[in-house]
Image (cartoon, rainbow, N blue to C red):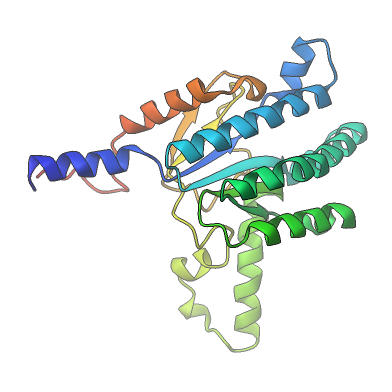
Length: 248
């Protein structure tokens, strides 16, 4: 391989094509302001907008945001209710902007637990943007990695039960086709804000070979500079996928 080809290859792999973000720290940010948690969630929407704009301008193909986990139902009822209202308002306010910028929106997770009104908002938003071929934006809402894997296992189990599939025919690739995001490029980089160093049941199957970047920045303060720092760190990683470094 020539030096020019090597440089081009390094440049391609230095930019993550699929970035997933665990947006953590809204509540702590609000408390530092002497406010209720919902105040932090409202400001967090601004960080979502900045992140989408950054992803579009930097040529990232897919952005997946962890908005509401299946465990978040355990939060105080008032906070959960405020989050649901904020979700509806955010969809109403942002969907036309996303559509204008050729962004395709997809909500992943068990949305059946949401109100019919919110489910309808999600359906309309996805329908409006389904033919857009720009940034693919995934919002993980009432999502859990274990739930995701279990849904895939149940689909395959049903096929075995009806003799459409034999147990020995089940492969890793076959299960991969049953989990969320199966039709997209793999997750290259996972960013978590808020100073925690765990994945919190997020995309457990999909991030097996992802790089991780943790920052103490709370989500409402996450901006273009923080995102750029994450990309710079990613560019310095050697991604082997279980193999040895190749020399040319």
